[in-house]
Length: 85
Image 1 (cartoon, rainbow, N blue to C red):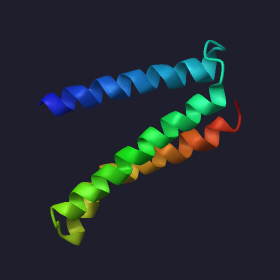
Image 2: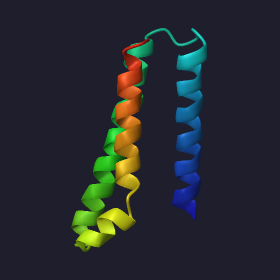
Image 3: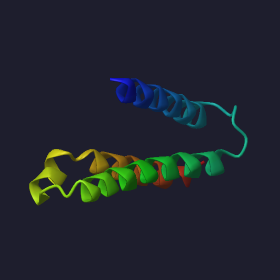
């Protein structure tokens, strides 16, 4: 339960940062901040995959516990969107 609350706060903070980047000019090095957010999402994806590897999960579990694919998608989209900043 505690990890869920931590991740929820992280996602809320990242959402606010992305909102500020997209709709305001409040954050000055916008592209660098967007790249930082993309790296955070990428690291979350890598940490999910490392945990699945460390726990020696079956191949089917990689699809059932597919949070890593969501984080990779978010990372790619934020990185792609950073080029328009």
